[in-house]
Length: 104
Image (cartoon, rainbow, N blue to C red; front, side):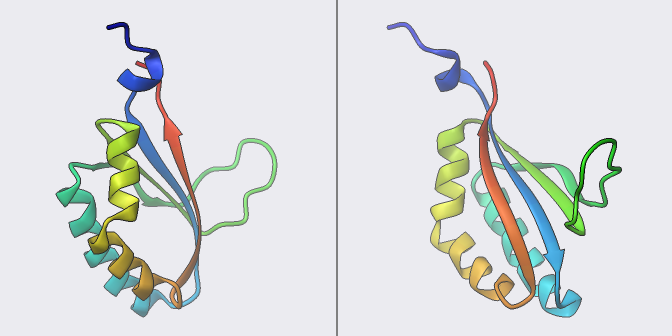
């Protein structure tokens, strides 16, 4: 069976966050980190302020989480553990969250 690069590539969750309540965000962060670990994810960029080289960027922070596959990243997002964390985050920060598929 021939596999395409999309089946072999890693999965990445890219997050741009605008923080509205730093104290409440701490609750989310702990729960989210547990969900990432349970799904086999690894933080490769962890809540840093980006340096804008071109264009506009208005979020406060960026996070990138790597998973073995895009399917694992999708499973993480839809997991009960992450969805419980997400409920805590809704009143603490606004997120733009993208699933990206890497090349194999």
